[in-house]
Length: 282
Ligand code: AG3
Image (cartoon, rainbow, N blue to C red):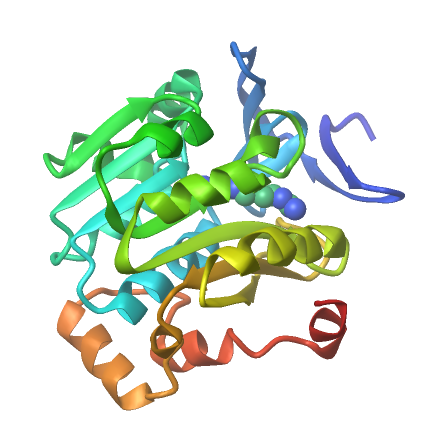
């Protein structure tokens, strides 16, 4: 057709293609292949090593669900640790909580932050300049194995377990996150598209489950994470945080004054209901 296309081949024999309507940036960083382009349906798109990480059109689903579910379930989160998340979308959502006093973000690749600030400015929306933020350029596993600080919520906004992101699905990483969580804290992580990456769900449950009193998954469908629902890993030592009380959740959400486009308290509770094929695999 003559149109330049970006083809993602993350899964065996199945993929997605997006037209590159304008190429904005393409470069091999110290860690990975970074590309940012514009697509007519999804706006600006960022991919790492050939895999779509985020788009302007649908990023809100993913970032809202990985932020507001753990923070509102916790109810009094003052300190948050973000692992990865170089595009800044997660940081933007976390900072919407006025209860949050401090956020540490640990990103391995400084050039992802730099280029996303430039070409995806709506993702971070100035978040990296917020005085509550401490940015650390380091390997997430290394950071959580030595950090002196503990956090109320830890969010792993990583790539798939291929290349630099692989270690963020290891037992060593989960051990480190456990030691960096305050009592009553919550750990969440992106865990891939369940239908096509079911092994990832099983492996995470096997590694993370033994470390916490309560380990589960919740989900959301994100169009450019093609293949159906994406699962988010959840772990805490307090089973009561996976609330069944919609009244209290609605109270907290309203008190937060946060405006969302995907998240709402009903959806929060419903997102923990998993399809039978996932339950059967666990
Ligand atoms: N990180 C999660 C990308 C996962 C894509 N994987 C997939 N389609 N299975 C996104 C970073 C956004 N801040």
